[in-house]
Length: 389
Image 1 (spheres, rainbow, N blue to C red):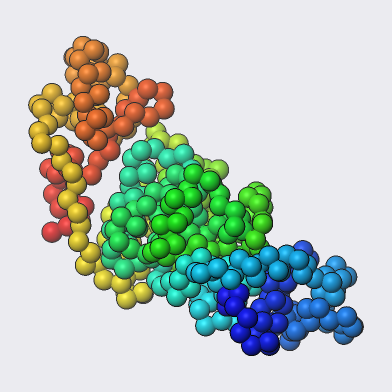
Image 2 (cartoon, one colour; image 1 turned 90 degrees about the vertical axis):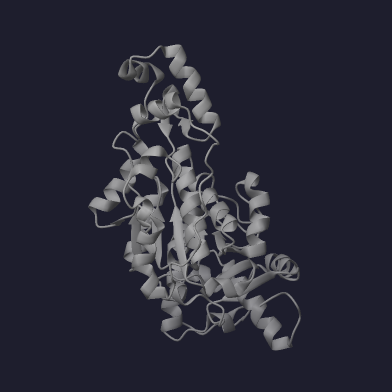
């Protein structure tokens, strides 16, 4: 639905749905319970003489007789703009997987194309403060899986979420961002430009009414939609107390696949993924691992072109040796110097060149780690690197 007038009955019904979305005493589970019991809440909006009983609490009965019509008028003004939609649980565009939840959203505000809601999707989530390697991994997986035909869904947050959206766009794929605010209030603000690009190739989505701020309670609700839209959830980096683990738990409870990328035992952001793997999540090393699991289920074929990684024109013997000394765990310049019998100043200079070339990244504590990828000497030397022929 949009904000155009249409028939009088259609317009009244749209206003009723918008009023229900602003009801303070009505959650998704309660709405579904009442609906299953045959209670037509949409038809009751604005009714002065509600039938007795019907399972309605006092607060909800009070709201139904005197809804927030001023808020509804603001919603209608927003819906009157091009590309702005409301998709209710009764609409054919409502995503089928989301309808299966025990607490499906009553309706979704959508900026973009509502049809993308029904595309086969993979959720990619992770830390808001990832390592550079984690960020690059999320971007690469999203680009490859997006090019293979999976829409990439995430929460528009800083860190892994943003990298996943960017990767999907770079792979010319579709991406969906589920907001933890009303769609008239973008959060975080620095992702405003990214959000506009997402609208061009996918959609921004929220179950929250316009004006809803980024309250802590809104993000777990957002997370259940992220996982609920997708056939599977991939966790890239997450600490043991990460909200991404909540999304993964929700995915498992919803009967969806859970994937996790392992990392160094010394990386705190790998511990959440390692816990998920111990609990039964599928260990993922390549995009093909995800497609192997979801491809047959969704009809997605792993035929996407894989871009060659950018390789510097030359890699000196000293740079190559230092990479081999590093391994893949973070290490300090002093330790590298001790391992190779090198001067610390020489190591520092070589690390600077490797960082400028995109081979290594400086992480917390002044340590360095390799970024990997197909151009990495160890990757290139490995048999069947990346699972490709």
